[in-house]
Length: 261
Image (cartoon, rainbow, N blue to C red; front, top):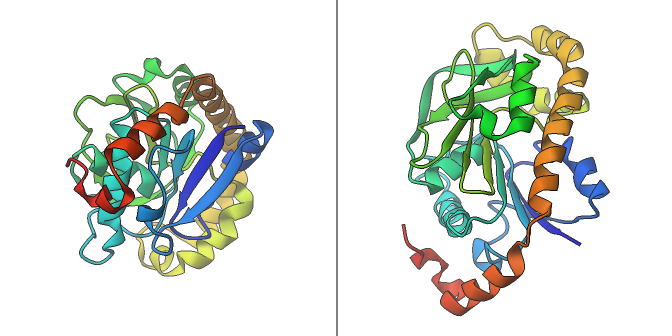
C-alpha cells in the first residue's frame, strides 16, 4: 500500500478529483494541516508521495506566516532526493521556492477558466501535453507567479503567465493551475474567496458559476486522466523506504532547520 501525505493549507482546497484516483490505487492518505501540525514531527522522506495543495497566501510571506520557512526547507529536503512530489497552486509556488526560484506578485490576478499553452518541454510529459492540445479551459486562481527553477522542464503556460507548470528531476511536478478542481467545490471556493472575487476586475460570481457550468465537467474528466497517468507512472517506482532510512541516519528531526539551503 502506497502512503500519501497531503499538505493542506485550508480546508476548502482539498484533493478534489485526485482523491478517487488515490482511493482506486489503494493508497493510505494522511493529511498534514499546515500551520497546525509541526514539520519537525514528520520526515520529508517517509511517504511514497507528497501532495502540496493551494491556499490564499503567498510563498514569500514568511514574515507574516513563519511556518512557510519550515515548509520550504522540508520540501527542499524531499525534492533534492527526487522523491515523488506534486504541488498545486500555492504548492507549485512553494516547490519553486524550495528550488531557489523567485516567487513574486504577478501583474494581474488570473481567476477563472482559460486553456493552457504548450511549454518548451511539454512533450516530455505526454499526458499533460495531450491535455494542453485539447485546449480545454482549466481553472486558474492566483495572483502570484514564479521564475522557472534552474534545471526545471517548462511544461505549460497561459495567455497571462509564462509559467503554469514545470517538472524537476524525475518525480516532481508543479502545477499553478487547478487540475484537482471538481465543480462541486465551486460554492465553497466562492464563499472562502468572497472578498477577492468582489475586488478583482472583470470577475464576478455569475461569470465563475456560468463558466464552471460550461467547462467544469469536461475539464475534470480530462484532468483526471492526466493525473491518473502521472500517478500510475510514479507508483511503478521504488520510492520512500530506503530514502527515509538515509534521512534518519543523516538528520534528526531536531536538526531539520539546518538542512542545506
